[in-house]
Length: 344
Image 1 (cartoon, rainbow, N blue to C red):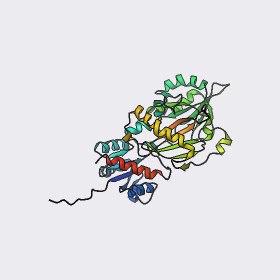
Image 2 (cartoon, rainbow, N blue to C red):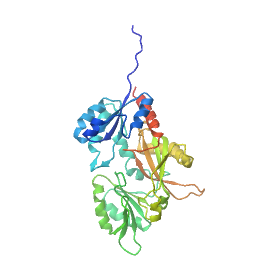
Image 3 (tube, rainbow, N blue to C red):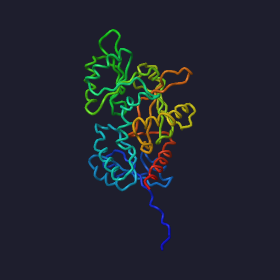
Image 4 (cartoon, helix red, strand yellow):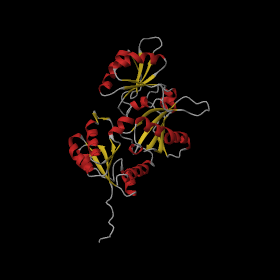
C-alpha cells in the first residue's frame, strides 16, 4: 500500500478588478494596486491570480474564475457609465458552481447599498431615516421633513458622492437650497426641479433621506472590517456637503491608522461586539458570508450625556474598498484562508 503523503494543492484566489484588454494582458501579481494583497496571500500559502473584467470578454473571465477556489472582487457599482449587472450575474453563476466569492452580489444588495441606512435605523448607529420608493412618495413626504431641518438625499447605489445631496428649506422662499456632494457651491431651485434631477434614481432603486449631521465638518471616521473584525481606521475632514468656506479649507486626505488607534477603541468595540452582530441578524447574513473587506463611514452625532461622541452611519462600502490601512491586507488574507478552509 502506498502510504506516502502527498501535499495538498495550493489554494488559489483570483483578485478581480475592472479593466480593458490591455490591462488584462499586462496584469501581474507584482504590480498594481493589489500587490500588497497578493503578498499577504502568498505569505500564508495561498496563490493569488489577477483577473481583469470587462463585458467584452466576460466569458473568458468566467472560465478563469471557475478554475480558482475563491475570488476577491474590487469593482465599483457605477464606473465610466457602466454598472455591475453583467458582472453580478457572472459572479452568481461561478458561486453557484462552488467558487467562493467575496463580496457576493447578494451580500452587497443587503449591506452595500444606501438602503442599509433605512433597514438598520433602529440600531445605535441609526438616525431618523426615510426610504422613498417613488418620486411621488418623495414629493409628498420630503417637505415636512425639511421643515424640521436640512436633510441628505442619497440614491440607493452609487460611489464617489454621486447622487448625494444636502437639501434645506429657505426661510423666506418656496425654493429649496441643494448642494451636490460632488460640487463646491449650492443652488436654489424648486422642489419639482430637484425631483426631476432625482427621477433617474428611481429607475433602478430607491432614495434614502437622512437628517444632516451638523458636526460633519469635524470629520468622518471610516472603520475597516475584515469579516467581523476591525482591521483599521481612516479619518479625514471632508468638503462634501460642507457649506462653510473655513471648514472646507480644512479638508484633507484620509489618514489611515491601525485597529489599535486609541481614539477609536470605543467605536471598534461597538463595531465588533454590538453593531456587526446586529447587522448580520437584521439583514440575515451568515457570519462567514461577511465580505473579506468592507468599511463603514461614520459622522459624529450629538454628544452624549457622559460627554462621549455618538456615531451616525453614513454608508457602508462593500463593492470596491480601496485604499485601506496598511494592516488590512494581512487581515484580508487571514479572512480568505479561514473561509476557504470551510470548503475542504
